[in-house]
Length: 373
Image (tube, rainbow, N blue to C red):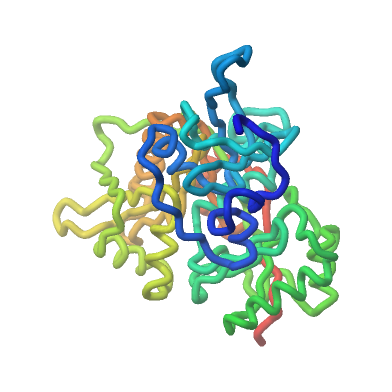
């Protein structure tokens, strides 16, 4: 079965490692123990649900020795991969894989690296940079719950096709959150300045009594700002030292808690739940306490910046810019030309800061929730 077309991802791979099964169960499947071949090792790190490219060995007698398959990885078990290409769904024998890697979303509009991806695709990337502890789905919509830690990790990402009539999809989501004793919140995006009632899902929610922002000013309009890692000012010999740690340290978490309420267990799980992340910080040379920090999410072609914070007593000293410069340096060194960040539109100083570093608004989103008061 070399590059053989197939139909359903569970037809021949088994149910435990498919994106559709993850949607039905609302949690990540347990990965199987891979067979110890080069092809199995190369494909073990591929992300189910992500865009991948796979170089694949063809059968003897074929015109070429190998070919490439580009598409979404929808399933994987110990023996096979299922990849949706633009023209067909193919089943690939893992042992015959020569090379494989996750790749960025495709360009869908003109512009530079940070501008040409669609809002839908960038939303999917950002969701992977801030993974909820409990996930489900209805069609393409992603249902997320994390014990109330942040709106991003506790809302429905309304993207793509829910595969059900709109009212039934909303019913499904509301039931999913009710089963978890959590309020249903929906994250809906559009072009800058979009009117919520112009988005079908948002219009349906408004009719049910949901409100834009759900009573919170910082949820009414969130800007997704993007920029080029190459355009961020580089670190210099005068820059203060920045520590980058792949593991979440207690000191970093305690400093992070100075800027927002944390939920023990859920906060740590979300902060460490992406395929890759770095925890950056600057410490006071005298007290050794962390005075500036940020979290960097790592994606193919993209870096995400979360939780940028500078202690109030140390602001306006360039520490925020230094942290972003460190992120950009890592991004440039690891083939990530584009950076994204999410900032509330009512945070004028924050918006101005990112604009000063060359970032612009890619699109925006809003949360819809039922007001609590």
